[in-house]
Image (cartoon, rainbow, N blue to C red):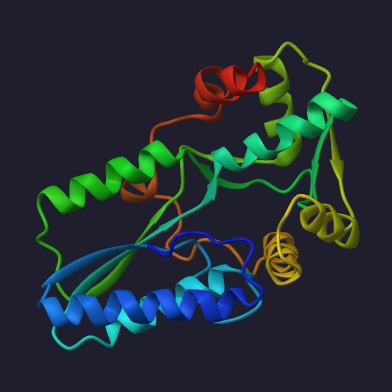
Length: 226
C-alpha cells in the first residue's frame, strides 16, 4: 500500500515514488505474489483524485516480470465519516461535497483487513486481477447522516452538500496541502458524476459484512465522545 501523506506538495509524484520503491523491492526480493491496497475507480488514470495514484501502483506492480498481483479495490471507507465529528460538534451538521441522495458503496476498514488476511493466508491467485470490496450495501449521504446521528443521540442531524470550493478551502485549513485538497475535491466530483464507481458490481465475493449501523454504534459513537 501507499501510506497517506496529505502534506506533500505533489501527491501524484509522491505516490509514484512509493510505488516504484515497492515494485523495485518486490522484484529484487523475488516475491512471487503481491496483494495491493487499491480503490474502487482505480481503472482510471485521471479524473478520480488520489485514486489515480493507485492506478499507477497497480500498473507498476503488473510490470514486474512473473509477479502474480491481486489488487483489492475497496469502496469509500466508513472511517472517513470520523472526520465529520468536529463539524457535528461545532455546527450541528454533517456535510461533504458528495450528493445527498445518490447511494454508493461504503466499507468498514476491518472488512478490508479481513479480506486481505484471507487471501494472504492461502495465496493461490495467479496472474493479474482485482477484487472490489463494496460493503454490505449502498448508502446515500443523507441516510448515512441519519444513521450516524441516531448513534450519537442526534436523530435530526442534517446533511449539507458543500460547494467544491468551500470544501477545498476547508481541507487546506485542516492541514492538507493545496495539491492534496484539489485531488480530494476531484475525487468527490468523481463520486458525484460516476467516474468513481464499481465495475464488477455487487455480488457475494464483493460484499462484506459490517453494516453502517454496526460501524456507527461501535466506532463512530465512541469516537464522538472522545
